[in-house]
Length: 472
Ligand code: NAP
Image (cartoon, rainbow, N blue to C red; front, side):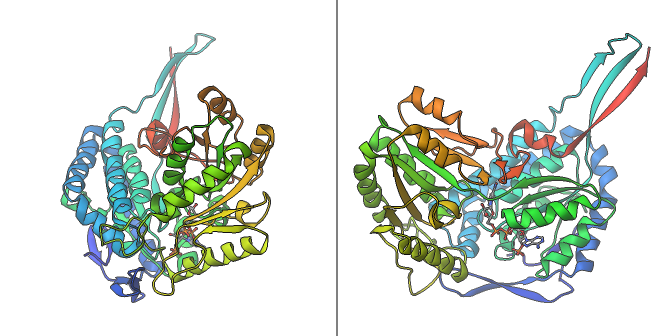
């Protein structure tokens, strides 16, 4: 298990000592990870800057081959990667296996995109010159990731950045640095040149990230995390006019329209709500169900959610693991208590476990739109249900949020598609709950973010256009 910084091709201790990484299901310390000082972070940016010219000039085919070799290696080690994800994040084994595969796919997808970057060639309307539009790697990139998908959020940034010809410094979440170190170790084994990918883990995160974003070599920030921290980093990026891609918080509505197939909607709700134990930016955060289906939907959802065995993720029979920390468990408990104070009725769950960071599957009915549970990202296995009578009102409530990452609509296909197009969301699942795909542009509208990850759009975030005027 790697537990050091990776700077300029070397695994190194941190100048600020170490910090503990815990198994959330037991509270046990599983590693003391190197704590990076701000100086370590600057050394990592210096290393990325020194490696940039050579990596940018490396043939796209060669860059692609490194990504492909990493894909092959991680595919063959899928269960080891999943094991590590479970140990430091707490999620259930099937969720960890799903994440390991999804994360690995970004190396395959962007190995294929690396050799397909297109420019443009036009004749000026005046006929006096040719216009060539070329795509250049944007430069040294700082990548910051959260704890909920410790592998996939890192590979969704590293792979397109390297495919584009950028060099990077990765700063993973303090709760989950081991997975990031594992992935970089796999890249080293696949032939990663020194300085192209660097790893830093500062526990004094604000000043360290600020120093990196003020380093003159840095040209790109790609951040995934909360909208609150995203706003701070957008301000920081403004000082040097750094290009910023932001994958931020969500508050996904899940609409069940009149005429929806009940069992299909319940099966979709199970995926949209319970994948990753509800700790997903794409998690359905609030359910709006037409009165004609409400009682049956609430009863069936409570039945299905209540049947999920909860316990440590390494026990492969469990389907609901722990939240990442006791603090997260207590946050979810506070939000549910507040919702109950506001009038919600508990149909299932509602009581945190006394041991470990577990919170049980919880279904709440009688929820009013506009209260705590429909306006706050709960990030746990909690399904608050609001009943509606009028589809226009459901659309208004779904859009009544500062967020716009994803929405789900279940209904008769024509009606569901019409409603989907009225929703302020970067992504909409129409009678489908699993939406993420390396080949699709992932990202949000409104305060859920700027830019897209995955697909062709994902590599574009790490490229900059250059116009060449050619005299005729
Ligand atoms: P977070 O608190 O915003 O942290 C995310 C990352 O930012 C971590 O690496 C964290 O480091 C770092 N960070 C925290 N404060 C910072 C500061 N002042 N300056 C610079 N960096 C700072 O988010 P989280 O709690 O880990 O993750 C949950 C959030 O991520 C949710 O809102 C979720 O919706 C969002 N998310 C969005 C997407 C998407 O694609 N849209 C995907 C996954 C998650 P430390 O861990 O060291 O504090």
